[in-house]
Each structure stands twice: as C-alpha cells, then as structure tokens.
Image 1 (tube, rainbow, N blue to C red):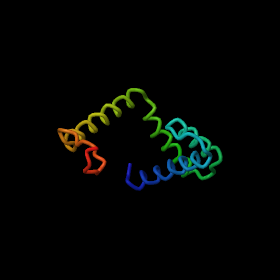
Image 2: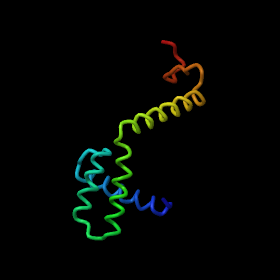
Image 3: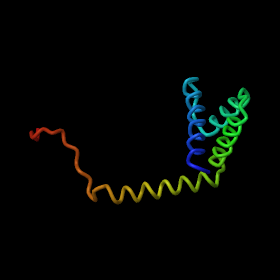
Image 4: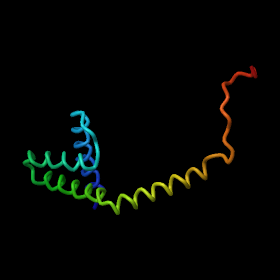
Length: 102
C-alpha cells in the first residue's frame, strides 16, 4: 500500500470516528467497522466504496484474538523497556515544598 493510500484510509477511519463521537457513541474497532458499513450503504462513489471496504478489511485485522494478544504483548514489552531506561532506580519522595518539618 502506498503512503497516499494509507492517508486516504486514515481519513476515512477518521471520518467514521468523528461520526461516532458526534453521535455520542462509543468508539471501538467494532464500532468503527459498523460505522464504515453504514457509510458504505449511502455511498455512491465506487472509488470511495472501495476505500471504505479497504479500511474495514484493515480494521478487521485488529479483532482477531491472536493478533490482539501479540499486539498487547509487544506494547507491554516496549513500555517495560521504556520504564527501565527512563525511570530512576530509586523513586523521588514527594514533598510539599515547605521547609518546615511540622
């Protein structure tokens, strides 16, 4: 997929996200797939219909349990590595800023 095609896919997913947000609905992968389906029902432009179908297909990759587990595990490993490299070994105690010990 070319960068230009990715940008169009992101725009379509963003449009679906905005539709959900403005409708005060939950935003999830499943909700985005359903919203893209609703958008496709009223779309008359064949090129845009193909883009919506591509976006739905891409999103469906994230509802497969094995893919979610792999993604979650990778995210956890990256977060742990980041913590180990950025956090001090000993926590800094919280102080109120007052020099008074009372």
